[in-house]
Length: 52
Image 1 (cartoon, rainbow, N blue to C red):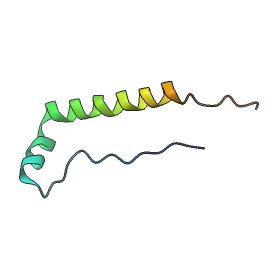
Image 2: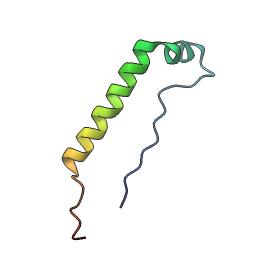
Image 3: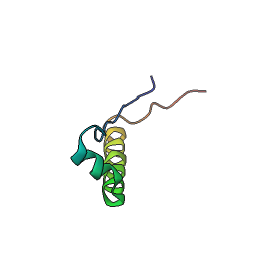
Image 4: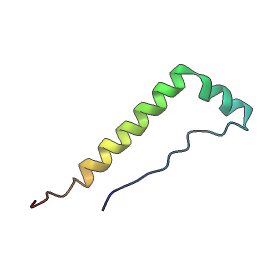
């Protein structure tokens, strides 16, 4: 099994969200939050060890 996720951090047709998406600070904060969520997922569901 390979986990997958689709992340939507905003919608460009929403003017307020479009301005956020253009912000370097928001982009960094969103990337950090996504990475933290991935780390927490793998803490709860560690990858299976292969016998290969």
